[in-house]
Image (cartoon, rainbow, N blue to C red; front, side, top):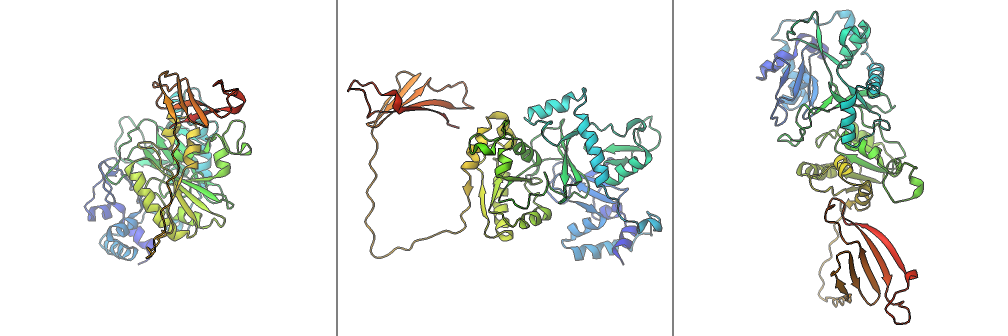
Length: 469
């Protein structure tokens, strides 16, 4: 039996029933493919497809069999068996089966432009407030907002309506809606900030939605964000913010799309002035390419192939959340990357505990990204060991220890003096701004006193602002 015939004869409800899975009246159920505390899998009976917003698994009725049986071969055999137990159902006219699949790029590009325009509307207060709270500038980023109203009151022509259904932007609602006439629809990613996901040519082939109303940061048992927070179109494909440029030498992998968007607009302080624009926005993207994963378990085949295609790649930097799932994902991904791109240096950022890239921007100055990137930690490719020999070398003498005198009596003028230097903390340390921990140091040479008076030559001093964070 051909795959097309299996799909024609077998609907997704039959497969779910066989495995003891029962969606609720909204087509939601707990995902059987990861530890799911709440219903995160959506079933679309009209297209015989499913999508899990928690672990990212998606596909059709056959894919459920493949995942449940453990291999593609066993899954197809089980689907064939189930298809033989049901009456033949012709979902589509025969002349429609041979038609090429509709290219959704045109539809997604058109409606993403509509979502972008939504942010320019005066009533778009809540999405703008949300973006401001995340320190994301919608004027410099490629983002939009879906209020879920784009199909209401006859706004769509019949071709556009069908195109939205085919692309997954609208899902026919099977339940009864009071006072509703005809078919009603559920809009994809309602009340969400929308990000475009692109193919190798830079075309929009999928969309990601981040809810502005559900900001629950709790995780499932598997370490993935719970459902209701992240939304992907069915049959997710493509990369954000797009495929890395072929000339990429250094690549930053982030855990989430919002983290990548944050880095896209960060102008790290310091570094080569030629790498900074007047607004400071382009410096990170001039030094590094940026690529978002789709969660800690969201490293896809498309990510792998895109990275393997980078012929000039020298380093991959893993910039994940500062929590246990993030650290575990870094270790797992490092091991996998070594197999796919041997010879490429792999390093990681020590993200502060409980922080992610976006929260760092909310609570700190952009200079923190310069600090973290400059102090990234390399994974050791080879561990060098030295065997003990019979003749042990003489131990090296201990380096001379600097001696100095600390004078903290004046909290606004703390000094530390040695034979060569005097270091002064001007203004002391502001205990009311521990989230910044900046101090101003004045450093002078003490071997240039004027005439033995104890007054130091000001020409031999410097001032420096130090961020203790």
